[in-house]
Image (cartoon, rainbow, N blue to C red):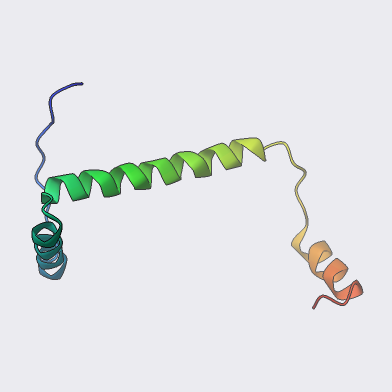
Amino acid sequence: MSLPKRATVYFDPEIHRALRLRAATTERSISDMVNEAVKRSLAEDAEDLAAFEKRAHERDLDFEDVVKALRRRGKI
């Protein structure tokens, strides 16, 4: 594992206070919590990209045609 890299991040005062309180109550560092949140966000992005790639070859649907079909079937 590589050594951690240092970065300066500026938080809104309210967010910083909430982070400090959470860090104190969970006995974790703000860095650990921010790293975890960023990893989760990046994982969600990767899932979204995978879903887009999986559906890339689906045919495009015309919005108006979809709405008309929903009306015909009594869905809207």
